[in-house]
Image 1 (cartoon, helix red, strand yellow):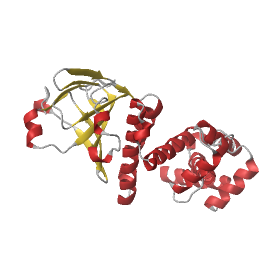
Image 2 (cartoon, rainbow, N blue to C red):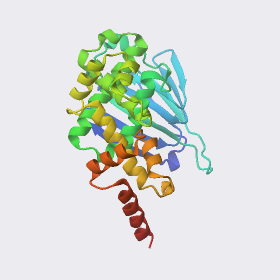
Image 3 (tube, rainbow, N blue to C red):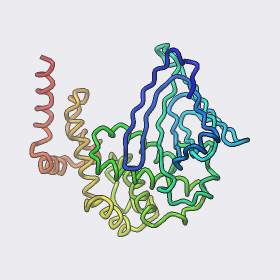
Length: 306
């Protein structure tokens, strides 16, 4: 690596081991990363590098004649087996500080991806979007995973590393129209993660039900129940929706910015419009009423301020 900021180069790098998958969040000034044929002959770990650009630009020259430029919201996939020259330039922020590049990267052993390497080669070095479809799901998953990485137990980290591999494989297969190359297990795990993201986006909607979710993903209700329960430790999709709605209400009731919002409105915005149903479910889940939860949270806030 080289940089025009070599005399004052400061970088932030956070690495999270997810089994054999490595997730990296980075922030640094403009820099150049070069991998030559000589480096490859000396050592090739046979990895795919996946990068999600979150600020700055990413210029790539790969092999002899491939070139592409990536911006915010783009995904770049390259491998360790082909020479490349990556030049990253930062964007100046509103505080007038030096320009910096930020992004998320994934190091993924090539052997983990079930898509044949001869097919994956067709995507390497191309500018691909994380703004819609499977690319958006993959990008959002990586961002959320990075935020929670420090709290993961080793077994959870390894399981989520497998999910990263499945989502990456599903995204690649979709871009190549080669979904048939994926093993059934990979397709199922990717489908369940797609369902989870759909649920998270629509928790506020009281009409979010298993039939609606199944129809949105072009599968039967029985298939949805079977897949979700199998890949969620036995939890049903209805139970998952209820748990997440109550957790969101539990959080919102402790938010001082929402102290004047009626409790039934908080419940409705979390997808539970019937006040009596909400109160019963909340007390069963947390052992206290919604009103008492708000009172205790505000008292704790006042105590901390005093």
